[in-house]
Length: 180
Image (cartoon, rainbow, N blue to C red):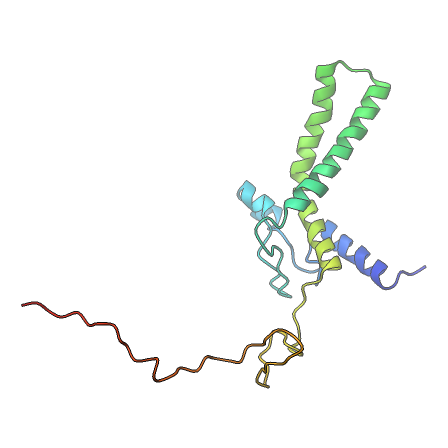
Protein backbone atom coordinates (compact mmCIF):
# COMPACT_ATOMS: atom_id res chain seq x y z
CA UNK A 1 0.00 0.00 0.00
CA UNK A 2 1.56 3.26 -1.12
CA UNK A 3 0.91 6.47 0.75
CA UNK A 4 -0.06 9.54 -1.20
CA UNK A 5 -0.69 13.21 -0.50
CA UNK A 6 -0.11 14.54 3.01
CA UNK A 7 0.76 11.12 4.50
CA UNK A 8 3.69 10.65 2.17
CA UNK A 9 4.86 14.21 2.74
CA UNK A 10 4.80 14.04 6.55
CA UNK A 11 6.66 10.73 6.52
CA UNK A 12 9.31 12.15 4.21
CA UNK A 13 9.64 15.28 6.39
CA UNK A 14 9.98 13.21 9.57
CA UNK A 15 12.48 10.89 7.89
CA UNK A 16 14.58 13.86 6.85
CA UNK A 17 14.27 15.30 10.35
CA UNK A 18 15.55 12.11 11.96
CA UNK A 19 18.56 12.24 9.63
CA UNK A 20 19.04 15.94 10.60
CA UNK A 21 18.51 17.08 7.00
CA UNK A 22 16.67 20.04 5.49
CA UNK A 23 12.91 19.29 5.34
CA UNK A 24 12.58 20.86 1.89
CA UNK A 25 15.46 19.45 -0.15
CA UNK A 26 16.54 16.61 2.18
CA UNK A 27 20.19 17.00 1.15
CA UNK A 28 21.97 19.52 3.37
CA UNK A 29 22.50 19.20 7.12
CA UNK A 30 20.58 21.36 9.57
CA UNK A 31 23.43 21.32 12.11
CA UNK A 32 27.19 21.27 11.86
CA UNK A 33 28.49 17.69 11.59
CA UNK A 34 29.78 16.12 14.79
CA UNK A 35 33.46 16.37 13.83
CA UNK A 36 33.12 20.13 13.15
CA UNK A 37 31.42 21.06 16.45
CA UNK A 38 33.76 22.93 18.76
CA UNK A 39 31.40 24.00 21.52
CA UNK A 40 28.01 23.30 23.01
CA UNK A 41 26.67 26.24 21.04
CA UNK A 42 27.68 24.53 17.80
CA UNK A 43 25.99 21.35 19.02
CA UNK A 44 22.66 22.95 19.97
CA UNK A 45 22.34 25.76 17.39
CA UNK A 46 21.18 24.97 13.85
CA UNK A 47 22.58 26.74 10.82
CA UNK A 48 20.81 29.92 9.64
CA UNK A 49 19.21 28.18 6.69
CA UNK A 50 19.68 25.69 3.91
CA UNK A 51 22.43 26.84 1.52
CA UNK A 52 20.92 24.72 -1.24
CA UNK A 53 17.23 25.70 -1.24
CA UNK A 54 17.30 28.81 1.01
CA UNK A 55 14.79 27.49 3.57
CA UNK A 56 15.31 29.41 6.88
CA UNK A 57 15.63 27.15 9.92
CA UNK A 58 15.04 29.73 12.66
CA UNK A 59 12.49 32.41 11.87
CA UNK A 60 12.37 34.47 15.06
CA UNK A 61 13.80 34.61 18.58
CA UNK A 62 12.33 31.87 20.73
CA UNK A 63 11.38 29.77 17.71
CA UNK A 64 12.70 26.54 19.25
CA UNK A 65 11.06 26.88 22.68
CA UNK A 66 8.31 24.44 21.72
CA UNK A 67 10.85 21.94 20.42
CA UNK A 68 12.80 22.13 23.65
CA UNK A 69 9.88 21.94 26.06
CA UNK A 70 7.41 19.76 24.21
CA UNK A 71 9.44 17.44 22.02
CA UNK A 72 12.76 17.11 23.85
CA UNK A 73 11.66 17.26 27.49
CA UNK A 74 8.40 15.47 26.75
CA UNK A 75 10.18 12.55 25.12
CA UNK A 76 12.74 12.52 27.94
CA UNK A 77 9.93 12.44 30.51
CA UNK A 78 8.24 9.52 28.76
CA UNK A 79 11.58 7.70 28.68
CA UNK A 80 12.05 8.40 32.42
CA UNK A 81 8.58 7.11 33.26
CA UNK A 82 9.21 3.98 31.19
CA UNK A 83 12.57 3.32 32.92
CA UNK A 84 11.01 3.94 36.34
CA UNK A 85 8.14 1.52 35.74
CA UNK A 86 10.52 -1.21 34.51
CA UNK A 87 12.94 -0.76 37.42
CA UNK A 88 10.23 -0.50 40.07
CA UNK A 89 8.34 -3.51 38.71
CA UNK A 90 11.24 -5.92 38.41
CA UNK A 91 14.15 -4.77 40.60
CA UNK A 92 12.76 -2.87 43.66
CA UNK A 93 15.81 -0.61 44.06
CA UNK A 94 16.37 1.77 46.96
CA UNK A 95 15.48 5.42 46.28
CA UNK A 96 19.03 6.70 45.63
CA UNK A 97 19.81 3.93 43.14
CA UNK A 98 16.41 4.36 41.51
CA UNK A 99 16.91 8.12 41.10
CA UNK A 100 20.38 7.64 39.61
CA UNK A 101 19.15 4.89 37.29
CA UNK A 102 16.24 7.03 36.05
CA UNK A 103 17.72 10.54 35.93
CA UNK A 104 21.14 9.74 34.42
CA UNK A 105 19.78 8.34 31.14
CA UNK A 106 17.31 11.23 30.87
CA UNK A 107 20.06 13.87 31.08
CA UNK A 108 22.20 12.08 28.49
CA UNK A 109 19.17 11.47 26.26
CA UNK A 110 18.08 15.14 26.37
CA UNK A 111 21.56 16.35 25.38
CA UNK A 112 21.82 13.85 22.51
CA UNK A 113 18.19 14.27 21.36
CA UNK A 114 18.19 18.10 21.38
CA UNK A 115 19.28 18.32 17.73
CA UNK A 116 16.67 15.81 16.66
CA UNK A 117 13.89 17.58 18.54
CA UNK A 118 14.72 20.86 16.78
CA UNK A 119 14.90 19.08 13.44
CA UNK A 120 11.52 17.40 14.05
CA UNK A 121 10.06 20.78 15.02
CA UNK A 122 11.37 22.37 11.81
CA UNK A 123 9.87 19.52 9.77
CA UNK A 124 6.48 19.75 11.51
CA UNK A 125 6.45 23.52 11.15
CA UNK A 126 7.21 23.23 7.45
CA UNK A 127 4.49 20.60 7.03
CA UNK A 128 1.75 22.62 8.74
CA UNK A 129 2.90 26.11 7.68
CA UNK A 130 5.22 25.95 4.67
CA UNK A 131 7.14 29.20 4.29
CA UNK A 132 7.83 28.98 0.59
CA UNK A 133 8.86 31.83 -1.65
CA UNK A 134 6.13 33.25 -3.83
CA UNK A 135 6.60 33.41 -7.57
CA UNK A 136 5.77 37.11 -7.65
CA UNK A 137 2.15 36.80 -8.76
CA UNK A 138 -0.37 38.74 -6.71
CA UNK A 139 2.06 40.68 -4.53
CA UNK A 140 4.71 38.04 -3.98
CA UNK A 141 8.41 38.58 -3.48
CA UNK A 142 9.10 40.03 -6.92
CA UNK A 143 8.29 43.64 -7.81
CA UNK A 144 4.96 44.22 -9.50
CA UNK A 145 5.04 45.89 -12.90
CA UNK A 146 1.63 47.56 -12.44
CA UNK A 147 1.45 50.56 -10.12
CA UNK A 148 -0.57 49.89 -6.97
CA UNK A 149 -3.87 51.68 -6.63
CA UNK A 150 -6.23 52.59 -3.84
CA UNK A 151 -9.51 50.72 -4.01
CA UNK A 152 -12.64 50.93 -1.89
CA UNK A 153 -13.01 47.22 -1.09
CA UNK A 154 -10.11 46.84 1.30
CA UNK A 155 -7.29 48.57 3.06
CA UNK A 156 -5.32 51.19 1.25
CA UNK A 157 -2.48 49.90 -0.86
CA UNK A 158 0.77 51.84 -1.13
CA UNK A 159 0.78 54.44 -3.85
CA UNK A 160 4.52 54.47 -4.36
CA UNK A 161 7.16 56.93 -3.25
CA UNK A 162 5.79 60.14 -1.70
CA UNK A 163 5.90 63.17 -3.94
CA UNK A 164 7.69 66.15 -2.42
CA UNK A 165 5.85 69.42 -2.49
CA UNK A 166 8.30 72.16 -3.53
CA UNK A 167 6.53 74.72 -1.30
CA UNK A 168 6.92 72.56 1.80
CA UNK A 169 10.52 71.66 1.12
CA UNK A 170 11.81 75.19 1.84
CA UNK A 171 14.02 75.07 4.88
CA UNK A 172 12.75 77.65 7.38
CA UNK A 173 15.09 76.82 10.23
CA UNK A 174 17.26 79.75 11.32
CA UNK A 175 20.87 79.48 10.29
CA UNK A 176 23.44 79.97 13.03
CA UNK A 177 25.40 83.18 12.75
CA UNK A 178 29.02 83.50 13.54
CA UNK A 179 29.94 85.88 16.31
CA UNK A 180 33.26 87.68 15.82
